[in-house]
Length: 343
Image 1 (cartoon, one colour):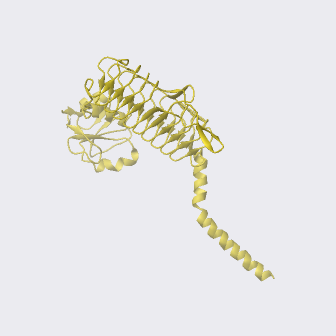
Image 2: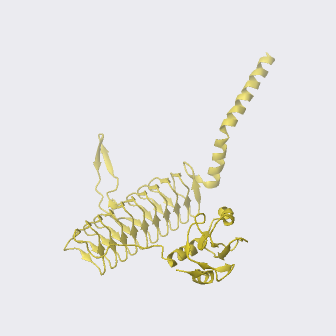
Image 3: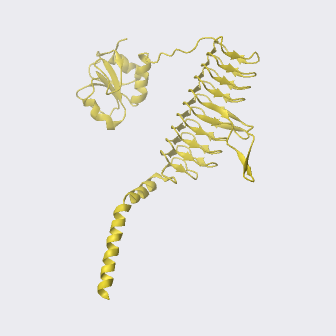
C-alpha cells in the first residue's frame, strides 16, 4: 500500500509540513524507521530523535518543528499513529473460525451468531456467548456465565460460574475471572473458609491483560467499569468496584471492597488496603502503598502513600540523611572539644 502525506493527513485530521505528495509505504518506531516509512513522536523528551530518524515523515504535536523531516502535526500523535497502523493493515488477526470438533459446548449452553470456539475449549450448562465472540483454545466458560457480543477470550482464560461479561471485552491468556475471594475466619489457629457467593461483572469495552485475577465477591459483585483497562499480572480482590475508564498497570494489587473512581490511574506495583476509596481522576504512583482513601484528582506516591509533593519533600530529606549524619557527628565532636576545654 502507498499513501501520500496529504492522504494520510486527511484521514487522521492533521496538518502537513513538507511535500504533500511524498509517498509513504509503511510505518515503524522512530528509531527503527527506514526511508519510505512514517513514525510518530508524542513525548517531547524524545525530540532529539527527530534529527536522527531515517523515517520519511513523523506524526507529532503542533509545537514540534523540524527542518530535516516532513511532519504531520496532530493534537494527539499517539492516536493518529494508531489510525495509520490500522490504515496499513498491521494487525492481521487469525482468530479461530467455527466450533472446533475437540471443544465441548453443552447442549444447555447458548451460542449467538458467528461464534467461534477453539480447540479443547469448554462451555458449560447455562452459559451464553454473544454474537461474533471468539473463544480461543483451552478456555473455560463456567455454568451460567454470560459473555457478550464481539468479545475476544484468548487461550487458557477461565471465566467461572455466573460471571457476567459485557460487549467488546478482551481478556488475554491465563486470566481467571471469578475465582473465590480470599476470605477466612481463624479459630484456635485454624483457618476456616468463608463461602464467596457473589459474582464478577465486567462492563463493555474493558480489556484485561494476561494472568490477571479478578475474584468473585463474598456477596453481591466485584465490578470492572466500562472502558477500563487492566494490565498484566494485576490482582483485584473480592467486592472491589472499579469505575469507568480506569487504568490499572502491571502488578498492582487492590484489596477487598476498595472503590476506584472513574478515570483514576493505578500505576505499576502499587498496592491498596481494603475498604478505602480512590477518588475520580486520582493517580496512584508506581510502588505506592495506599493505606487510606485518596481524594479525587489527587496524585499520591511513596509508602505510606502521601500527596505527591509532600512525598517528594520527604524523599529528598531521606536522601540527605547520610550527609546529615556526618554533620551531626562533626558537631558532636566539636561540642565534646569545647566541653573538654571549659573544664
